[in-house]
Length: 233
Ligand code: IPE
Ligand code: IPE
Ligand code: MG
Image 1 (tube, rainbow, N blue to C red):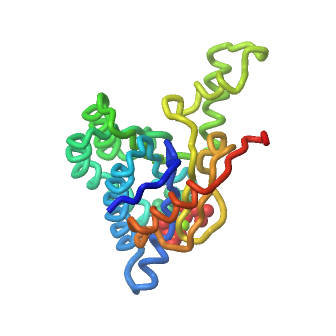
Image 2: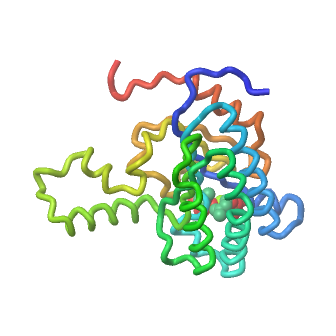
């Protein structure tokens, strides 16, 4: 049952952290945690959809996550590729548009093709935009924007926040209203640095694989009770 909560965020972004610790607690390999995390992601996207939230951004793999051992990196890439192939048709049936933010060119060919196919398949859908931040880094995003602005020979006097926004990967997305981080750490780990300037934050100790419908409800209730002032009174 979905509880009536208002106001709801229009755009929610999730830092899905704690898969490794979840596995460790159970004496399982870290990849078992990533698999459990993927299953949480799948059901959570459905739950968020039931609330009518239209924009969801998932921090799936950061530019810093390449620093992990090769086996873990390859395992995560494999889990993501298989999940996209399996889930894209179902997401398509449910009207979900798949979007990617970050870099695609460093990914293995088959994963890149899976993501591109999913984007193409779902490009006209309007029920929800599901953005996958995969090989995403907030600093890289800002530097990419600066490079493109220079390449386009934009004059210094013409650079304002609106123009800068148009050079970010998130150009087609509305403001991020709520950032949720599971796993107990109180940091944003290079996620949406520009976009989260006035986001609300919700941190929980719950590890990502345990982040169920009840937990997202708590986050949404917390959001609904915030007073957003944006510097005003
Ligand atoms: C988040 O879980 C998933 C990714 C960063 C890919 P972690 O793998 O960071 O899990 P912990 O933080 O080690 O528990
Ligand atoms: C943040 O988690 C990145 C993702 C959830 C994809 P990390 O586990 O990589 O963050 P740090 O290293 O604890 O900051
Ligand atoms: Mg982590």
